[in-house]
Length: 141
Image 1 (cartoon, rainbow, N blue to C red):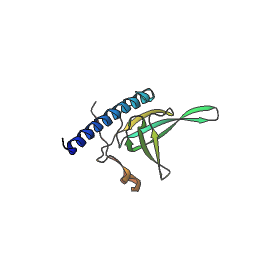
Image 2 (image 1 turned 45 degrees about the horizontal axis):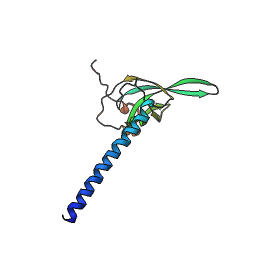
Image 3 (image 1 turned 120 degrees about the vertical axis):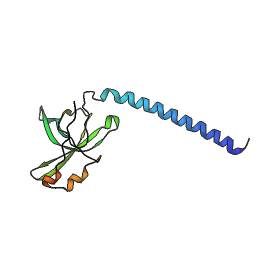
Image 4 (image 1 turned 90 degrees about the vertical axis):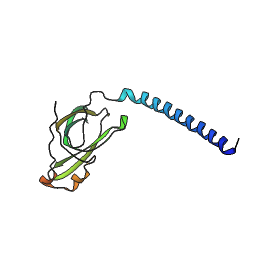
């Protein structure tokens, strides 16, 4: 046998071993993350106007604080599912990122859906006033 074919066989066995190891690690990670995922979440899209409820502790009391704005971006990676929400408060744009599977995350209500053509709406940061409005989309039920 040539040296190149022996080397290729060793390389193939190494690659298959690595894929099996990755698969096993992936299963292990999913089994650890599964109890912490929230099941009752609605599917949200970029451009939706949402009202997010976050649990806030003040002294020894706990209350829910609501944050209403447009979803600029979302990143979905199993337990690390985050959404960034932007609202304009007294003429100043305020953005906040929410970790959806966090225990502090209480509720999310979709108020309005918009028709967008991009997956990230960062261009809304530079637009002021009525120009920043998005066209509303109506979903069939």
